Image 1 (cartoon, one colour):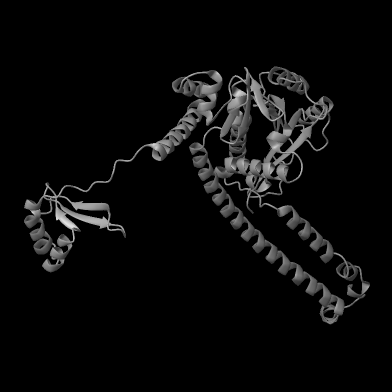
Image 2: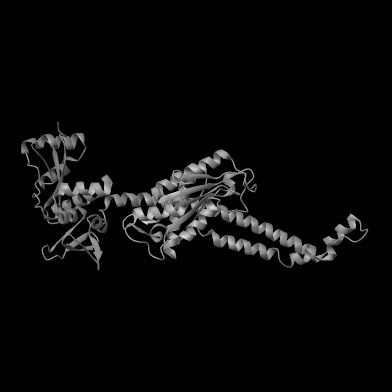
Length: 455
């Protein structure tokens, strides 16, 4: 069987919920299914042994700008594990056992994934080794870095399709982190398939199979010989019903296994294609300008009634363009650099440095590339073009060029002379053969010169 990555997210909406969750994960209360001879390990948050509730409160107080809403998710409990086939490949059903090097590899990859994705928002992570299969409970305070508010929805999605998409991408990300260990992403939509399998076996195990097993006719009679017993039940209709149902079960199991293999192959291909799409999206994003709403927020403007206000500005943002409605301004523009220059009243170099400080080198480069493309487009559109000119003909060089074209290149002499007479080929002062291309109005549009062909 293929080992699959497992990720679940649970909302903790009150400090009471947080305390209750900690009682379980930190083993502050009796846990019936836990093996008390095995010790759990704290992976993140070892330096602070404060109650989890205190850690979450301190994180919210230090990081957020506003008091949490009454319905806000204060903390998110992320459950991470893999199917038993990974931890004990030789005997997946042997609960409570695992291959230690494999377990350590899983812990290292999972901890790195948590740190890379959530940083110090992950206030604690516990590795549980005292249950059937090793797993991790990680507590993340879902703070939106832009608004500095709690937002489980922004981090993990809200309800409905948006939540499914975000959670699916999160599972993709975690599976990618475990992929080097041979752990794969579970097949999307597999829950419905599992339900059908369960329903199938419920049907198979129900009547008439159950009725047949309980039927006294299939029991051997007193003092009946084995030969007579076999002959008797082989002629019994209920015996044949058992055989047919067992055959159906085996056939269905084989079909399900083949379907799962195809589904896993399809899932691998989907993940490969999604990785290509993500790579292309990243490259495309690197060519796009910074979102003006992000730049406006960094500039200290606040959104009110659809306008970004502050520092004497009333700015409307429409995609890559902006317009300042403030009476003293009344000015528009486009692009991150222009917006910074306008609000900060600075030059282009100062705007690029400011963007570098807020968005890093990659962000400043994106804005600079977008600005350069805008300037280039304006130049191409507005700058006068130099009239097209053909190279000057030098008649004294024609004999050399003509000989080369006819004798070295094998072009018929009468054809070369006809082209020359019509002005479609001639020699320039560098003894090049100049071939002229004209439009339907017989006006020269371009040329190609074969360099020094006659030398």
